Image (cartoon, rainbow, N blue to C red):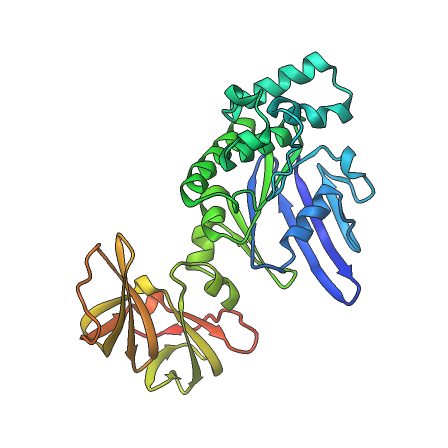
Amino acid sequence: MARIELKNVRKNWVGATAVDRIDLSIEDGAFIAVLGPSGCGKTTTLLMLAGIYNPTTGDIAFDGARVNDVEARDRNVGIVFQSYALYPSMTVLENIMFPLRFKKVERAEAERRAREIAGLVRIDALLERRPSQLSGGQQQRVALARALVKRPHLLLLDEPLSNLDASLRLSMRTEIRRIQRELGVTTILVTHDQIEATTMADRIVVMNAGRVEQEGTAKDLYEQPKTLFVASFIGSPPINLFDGHAEDGAIKVHEATVPLNGSARGNVVLGLRPESIRVDSTGTPARIIAVEPMGREVLYSADCSLGRVHFLEAGAEARHREGDNVALAFSPADALLFDKSDGQRLDAGIAA
């Protein structure tokens, strides 16, 4: 296994910067998710770790040894791609054994290791089948076994669950996490799906426009986002965001005035999570305009003096209907405040 370090890593293409001065340390045996929207640089970062791309500037180190000039085949990195990329003419056993050809492992030892890893990922009964005879989940397990059979120092997962249906994604999230813990292999998951990131990884690295916006646990990112981007990207349903102007100890938001605890001035953005807003007779008058049952919760949309608000209530059955008048309140401690110009979170808060 390996401790991974990226120091001031940058990747430029002609006329564009894909990754912009990343500094990141990943401890030996850790499971990290790199999370962000399409085009944020997360897959480019993964491919630089794999040795498929070389960084334009900066250093990549495995266990303190610089690997910028080490060929991909010599880095001992296992990769599972979104497409799985199995060889259709080979059996499952042959697909799993394939990476060991380049390590000059004898056939008997290669087969022993392939069968061992097939048992770990629970496909040992499928070894004589070909990929066309497998379900999507089974193909995903074969791809994972193939990446693990060479006992990699680093396992890279590039959107590995995106081709699976919802129930398979759920079970494979659990399986991949189980396997990673059993093997203790340093693992980096690249995904745009926050549920995958928060349920599988120890820590999450949020990327945007080629840069790391924030690194931390799922709880850190959700409750203490450092930037407006992190606050808006993490959370489902998404956070309510209201443009406002702060001056003289208050924030003017749409038709509402919210007391401010702090010295913030200028254009700001007020953030409120849907679960932080509650129906309360002492709150601000609002009118329900949409009701969306979500199983264990109901999501409401309402218009009030702040603007359009989305809030959650527990329970499978809606307690309010479209057109109902309610009053909405929130705890000042749950409010988040951001500078409109640079998106950074402000120390100032909402007064009680």
